Amino acid sequence: MGIAIVHIVRPLWLKALGILFPVGMLIAIVATANHFILDAIAGAIVIGLAYGLLIIFARLRRNHMPTSGLQEQRQLQDEHLVFDGTTEAG
Image (cartoon, rainbow, N blue to C red; front, side):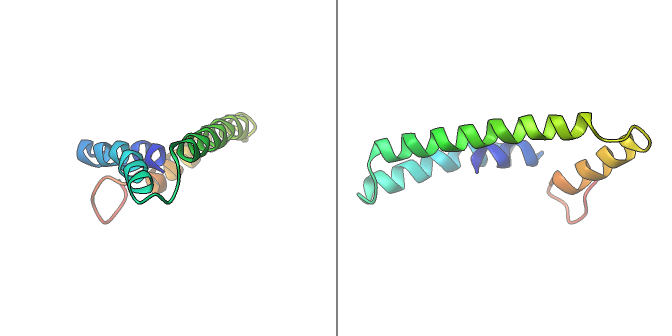
């Protein structure tokens, strides 16, 4: 989830929170004895594999999109996926 936050938001302070989120979660699960450190490592591996597959499929999708209107489609996707701290994308 922290990786997604870092990639989606624009303000630097929100990116910093995205980086700190997994660290805080690790501290919470180990401190409360709900999980062990190896559980967190296994979770990080699963998330890393899922993120890698996401990137591969996104590139494949982008390569197979029709060329007409491609720039407009990408711009619309970027406007809806990027949060810049305002109420409207842009």
